[in-house]
Image (spheres, helix red, strand yellow):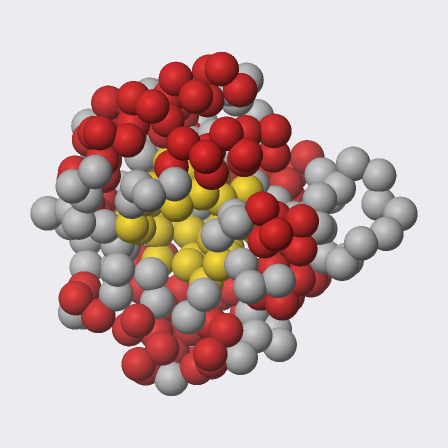
Length: 255
Ligand code: 13P
């Protein structure tokens, strides 16, 4: 598999962490550490930090993302944020379908698809998360699950729009647990996702698709995971909250 056909992207997913002053300190530390990166660098931050992140990263190589968006353009959805609201701010990326949204907030494959649709319509780039539960891995149905999640999420997405999507494979059992998938496990599932994309959109589209791994990726294990032929970057939770650790992962992806 030719990795030069696609860009590696390291994205931080801060989740529900960092007040504005804390965000400012982290981003200020991060900017000089990643300025020479030879990969995409994205920080996906809480809504309340978006403006701070956009201001501080203007003119740098760091792109800013949100962690979710609603599927409707506007309306009576108390507490939600629309894709248009993000796009208007200058936000470039949005994470959709994170397992924590699926697990704690009733997100389904169908609502993930609706949110992907809304994000694309607003001109955003999407980091689409898929991944199996521990029980599903133990039942040997990991590939069916991620392939189904991918197919449903991409329903109605054109080949041209697909170029604005990154897929992040995040095995749920590896998130925040310190249990990383082995490099081989990560590569195997990423490869299966690529084949799913190739079946839907053709080989060239599959080859061009950036597919990240996420789940306890850190400064110590990033290099091995990122060396895999089908692992094109990472979606980083805990380790994205420490500038030196995140920068080490960015460096590993820049090799
Ligand atoms: P951790 O890196 O903390 O395991 O989180 C991974 C993740 O969920 C990124 O979206």
